[in-house]
Image (cartoon, rainbow, N blue to C red; front, side, top):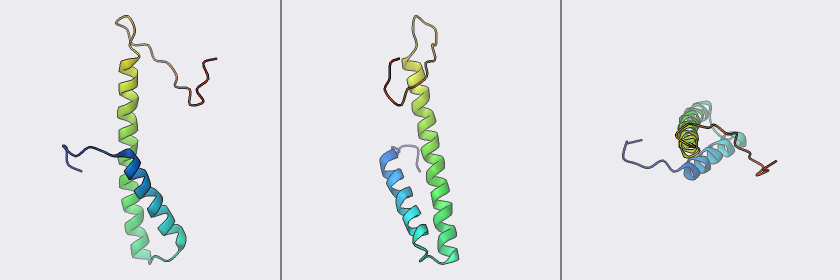
Length: 80
């Protein structure tokens, strides 16, 4: 991916899902399956990097009174 091309997380996840479906179908040759697996690993690494960058941005936004305050992210949306 070029430096000036924006990473589209949702699009990459859709690509990964398509790869999984193809591999689960059992219709790929070994060579095709290996190529798809390699592409899936590349996509996974890109998604992981994008998630790490997003986490870093969230941490910066949570800065309070000039000091970094790390707060756990609650995926359930509970404030308790």
